[in-house]
Length: 251
Image (cartoon, rainbow, N blue to C red):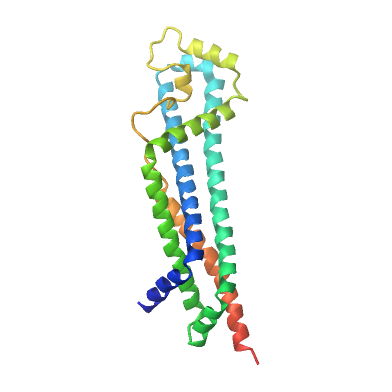
């Protein structure tokens, strides 16, 4: 109980620094949710593309083998790009929280010294400091989640526009306009469908009746919190252990 009480009091005392941390966590969480949701929507669109291909017989699809392969490759490239950006975001969080812990550890030297002098172990002090940051992380994450939910319709439209842009960037170098028109003309010859050639390649094109569901919530929180705990625990332990060593060996 005293442990939690000290952590909460420290949040109020160091509120300016922790307010900056709250803002940083908010943007990390929001970007993570955006990237993971965009990746999910891209896979959803690729599945819709595969489903529409099933409306054509195998003999007809032989003329579009290159186009189908290039399309699937483009979808996979977009997913890989999102995954790479997400790992980069997580690495940036790890590095930033480690750096902040290093600065904060030196700023709180006197406070740490007081804890050590009254018999607190290095583990106790580190646990309290990490808990303070975990509380801030939880608050920032919840704010980001609320912001993403409130902007659901706008976010859905923006993410589909982003997915389409990235998809076309990866597809265009492998499929020329002339080749695309020729193949789709052959595919749709004497066939009645509720979609055109462009809609075959990217089924989610245009306005959607139902906004996308926000995904990656648990992944964002657990991975972000895990990165924060590991980076700050290692940093605080190193700095406070050094301070404890100097305290024990001072003349």
